[in-house]
Image 1 (tube, rainbow, N blue to C red):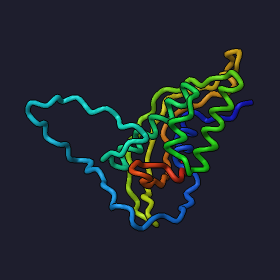
Image 2: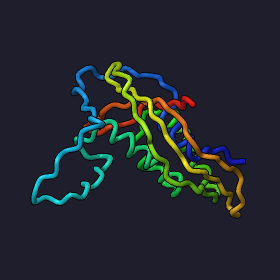
Image 3: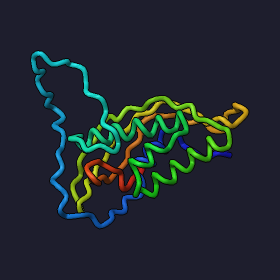
Image 4: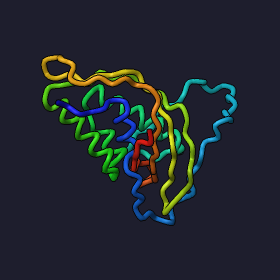
Length: 184
């Protein structure tokens, strides 16, 4: 039986085992998004959102923006079986590696996952330790299921709310998840 938990595993992969590694103390001070502020539109400029930055490019993306993008990529990875972008976003997170490995196992065996988007409903900064930023976040997910190579459902997931703790840091100008733990 395949043992991938689509929605919660996406977060668990996004937030497992809060083992803080020694970080670089010379990292620039991170920028936290102000959840209540939205920049005023500038006349003459389009009002559409800019494209999501590439995982490898340096950007001014906040840690909270990165966490939302990371969670979205966790769902995309489950839907497509392509773990490459997710792995680059989580290169030092052992729980994330295990989650990506489980996705690879499902797809390598000819199976697939039917997973809808989830919604990050809250992100709470907890602090900074050894150059890492630590957050709790809440995720609400839709039901999902894992199918074997013949299309038979081998596992179902109810979806619903869950909470995670994650540590992130900037490496070469881009955010990466360094640890992830499911809290509920």
